[in-house]
Structure formats: structure tokens, C-alpha cells
Length: 405
Image (cartoon, rainbow, N blue to C red):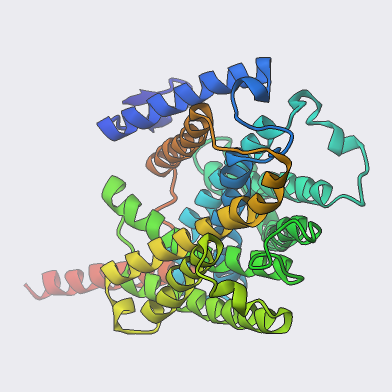
């Protein structure tokens, strides 16, 4: 599919495939369910109740979505602040994935809030004592910042007159864009920190804000690796193994810090007995730690981390570990307390459809953007200069050879 506008001859293309057709169907089905939810309320489209006010949409679309979108600020820190040029090939794809992830989070929040038509009130009502208020503001501002940051790419093709202004503002935008996620990533952990006595001791901790922040940072690398491998299959964009290995080592280092703090916290609070009780809670907790942290650390710092398949498993396990952690905190961690009051919860099919549809929307948007904007061809200034030098050298050599003939 290709569209050419007559006004500026801008070419737009989007290749339709069976997989993309399935994602489009899921996206349309999700939109239909969302319309029903907005008209008839949460009761008509979810299995939420007074005992379980938070369910799949909050855990998957918001808690997990924010965590998995953490690769954007992590890569921005490494590439644009620490100036690690070898990570430039994945800088823009990481930031694009993060932007789309936060768009899903914002949509998830709008769908999940009971009286969604009052979504504008936090902008004019100062709820400075509320953790959710801070999370709402940070996520909203960060999403706007990311849209403006993407303008540095987008204005090379459309609205070209604004490109020079956005480019000048990029240093400030990057600083704000790195600072804001550290606030709301940790604040999401604080939401459960204030629920003393309601979250299982295996997941409740005074260090929950720190754990949420660290896990959002190290899962970013895993998400980038998985996303890049999928992008390789979908659009043929191949990233060098050395780039993935470097990301895995950075992520693995943060995982080691996370584990040290986790073990120290458990020792201080005396929860080792809970971890080895071998009931449902302890088994899920051990799976989260072993498969989501220990094995990825071994892969990152062993010969397995030198192979593309090994690094792919690193990404899959890291992402799966954080997925399990966020689900454990909400469902497993709070289930024992909430079920005391006679309530129970399992997501309705409509909840699954909306979650799958939102992910499908993000995937379709990603494919459209990479096919129409310079996202995959991003290179550092140093690499561009080296290419310019090569271009100057080879023609002159050819000239000398021709002169010799």
C-alpha cells in the first residue's frame, strides 16, 4: 500500500501482510469493546468488583506498560549523556518503542478510570498529597516530551519548517525526558509501599520504589533486544551482536545491584522462610528471581552472551521476569488480602481483547513509522564523518587510477 500526496509529493507506504491483518482485526475489535466500555461502564466489559477495583488493564496496560517502555530513558541516558556511540543503531528504535508504550499506558489509564470523562480534572485540581496524582502528571508530561522528541525525526519529512527549532531544543528535552521516568517509575512502587499489611511480605518492602525503578531500567535492554529481533524479521533491520551484548552487560550489572538489595532487604525483614515455604506464592517468587534475574545474569556475563540466540533468551527471560513481578505484586501479592472479603477476580474475554488490541495498535504504529521515517538508519555524528571521509577518498583514488590509464 503506497500513498503519494499531491501537495508535497510525500510518499507513505505500509505493506499489508497476514500477520498485520490479524493485528488490525484485534485493534478494531478492541476499539469496539472500548466504545462499549465508555458508554456502559466498567461493569459491562470487565469482571472488576468492589473487592478487586484493579485488574488486567491496570496490571498489563499500565504497571507493565510503563516498565517495558523504560528502555527509552535508559538508552537515552547511555547514548546521549554517557556518549556510548556504539549504541546509536538502537537509540531511535528504543525511543520509538518507549513512546508507543506510553501512548498505550495513557489509553489504558483513560479506559480504566471509572468516570473517564473527568480525565481532565488532575490538570486543574492540585492533589499534591496523592501518589497517583504525581504518576498521572509525570506520565502525561513524559508522553508529551516524547512526542516532541520524535518531532526531530518526523519534521525531516513533514512540517519541515519546525525541524531546526526542535533540534535546538533536543538537549533540554532529553534531560527532562531522562528525569521524568525516574519519578513515576519509582512512584508506581510507592503505590504498593503504602499498602502495608495488604501486600504479601515477599513483595512488600520499604525499597519497593527502588525495586520498581531498577527493574524498569534493566528490563529496557531485554525489551530492546526482543523488539530488535522481531524488527529484523519484519523489516530486515539487523543490529550487530556486539550492541546487544553491551546492552545485556549493562542490564546484568543493574540486575546484580537489584538482587543484592533484594537479598539484603529479605535478610533485614526476615522473609527467607516465606521464600522457601514452597506454596504458590513462594514458587512464583522463586521463578521470578531465578528465571527473571539469575539466569539472565549468567547469560550476560558468559559465552552465551556472545551468541544472538543466547542474547534473545536473555531478553525473553528478562521481560518475562518483570512481567511476572508486576503481576505478582498486584494479583499474587494482594490476592490473599482482597479475597478475605468474599471477592474474586479473573479477567473477562473483553479485557483480554482490549489488552491484545492495544498491543496490536502499538505494533502497527511501529511498523508504519519505521517504514516511512528515518528511524532504522540512525547513525552517530562520528559514523557520519567516517562515511564522508570514505566517500572523499574513494573517488580520488578512482581518479588517479583513470589518470594512470
